[in-house]
Image (cartoon, rainbow, N blue to C red; front, top):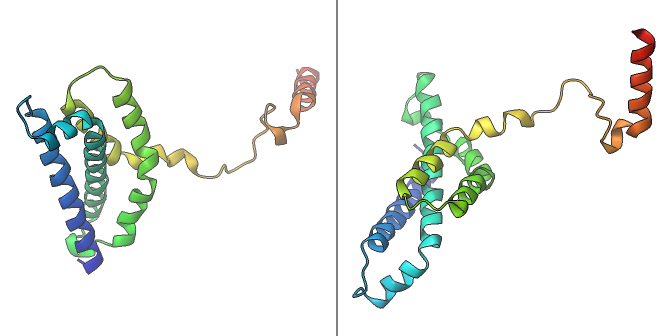
Length: 162
């Protein structure tokens, strides 16, 4: 394992344990808690959002390890650039989970942690449709599709053939 990968793993572990510990403090706080804990309780959404990001990244790492071990390679074959790709697309993967949490009235933190780790594990499924089309398609409502006249010409030629 390279030094950069060890550093990345260490930083992730610190962030995950730190946000998790803060969430435990927030959930167990009461009125007699210290002022800094009261501030955390008022702003628990920020801490929980960062904790959800950590769960999602854990899912991305788990997906990478799953693929790596399924092809018969071990931890020594891990490459930092291969892990950085999921991190680069993580905002796109995280936003639906975050908006789902914001719109929910559920008080279950575990539910959203599971959704976040699942979103991270299946991050590649969100981007499978992003590959270029093999053939050009004629979509009449697009700017390059020819507009309504092209759609009418296509419909007219279909009527002539049928």
